[in-house]
Length: 259
Image (cartoon, rainbow, N blue to C red):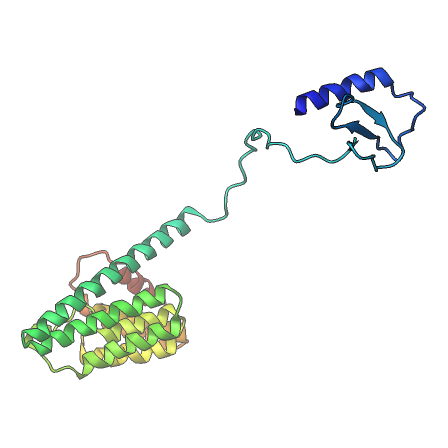
């Protein structure tokens, strides 16, 4: 049906011609009426207006049609300039993510261990696991940027550890929580507060390399050069027979060599 109408329109236009004096197109549009029934079905004629008599329908040219289908995707543009992050920054971020992942895993595992110990009547060791959980959570939160909550958790771990009863198996802790609190305060740029925590930690866990070094660095950053040198000297005495090449010892030797 539609093909018949279109064909009739084309034939009609050719027969009538655009020079027909019946009506002139106005304002860029041509209006046509075509018969929809009867013996003249499909025949068309130009009209001045848009109205067609009964039995005819109007057509208009230059109408906006429906949008066509999308064209083919163009060629890929040139690659953009490389980002500003250095490889060192990328490596540092990757390390931080790995540390956070491990902290979360350890905290989840420790929760299970703590529950098992409490069930077995081992309250002391359940408490020690709780201390480790708080420490892991503190550094996880610190890595997420919540500084105040990280200090709150780390301080809770330190206070809980300080209050726990002494045990022969826990005399030489790998990382005392108060010492780690000092480390966290140093990370946050609070060297004066960090020095206080390092000194408290050294009372509870004396003669520690990391304790002396942390206190020396905290004093140095706080502007107390005399106290910084005192702690570096204590570190030198503690490690006088050491044959290792730790970065803390190299720095200690540099500080003590300068007067």
